[in-house]
View 1: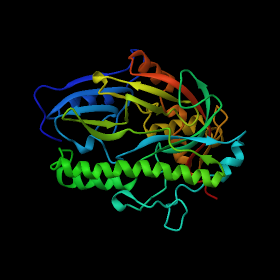
View 2: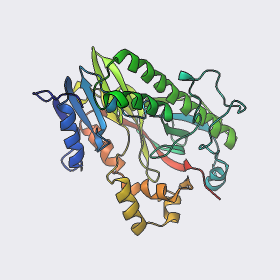
View 3: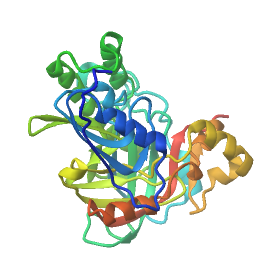
View 4: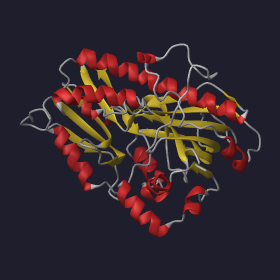
Length: 358
């Protein structure tokens, strides 16, 4: 990590007194605030600890720090309209394509151009909190790009191994220090951002072709792991979406709603909004507690009646809805701090995490 400056940057966490934010996450914000060149750290209401840097934070600095973006450069959430009538969750779940299998040049979804020429893992979703979900628009509060009763495909994924290779090339030489050549890092970073967006579109096409439904172009596609140059400074976002006049999908869990919001965050929030419900348990804790509280069947058929396609039992427990904060509380905090306005609510029908085995 770079030499720490004597006067820490300002830190502000946008949560209400009743919202729980883990102390380790606040401590990480304070440590980031002491990095050389840091100006302001804004924590979102989904703030939680990450590996060396907080997740759910936007960090403004005179200096570019690749580790504040992390390895999954360009990770984001895209929303695609789907034309489908009276979907049967069981039948659709059985027809979901294998999004663990990478595309090859013989697949009909193979693109003409691939950023950075990176063909590994193309068309795959990855693990962790990544998912592809068919959802129903359950409510519309304000004029939005969707209507009540519509169906959408929500794709949450990133740059897979490409972003990881970019960060590794930096850390092997500079550790958690600043980018020695910011222009070179940004060039590689921008390729990974484009790759992630392409990959989300490819997965939407794969699902549409497999289900035999029409999937339209993305109505939302916002990444939440990236850095941008703003007013001559570096604005790092890790688990925070661009909230400066953008429509953003803030993901709940696989058993709770998600929210489309209109972001209107200002400088105090580093022009950012939350990206999801935010973990309240580590994966180890979620696995241990989940096995004592839930059955596999309960996690595959959720409380809202949706189905989860996941052949990895450990991942099912790690990603259980109870491992996350209440999405309603996150949205309420964004509204209370005037960072975003809810537009619509989506409810899962089928969520793909990883292919069913056997």
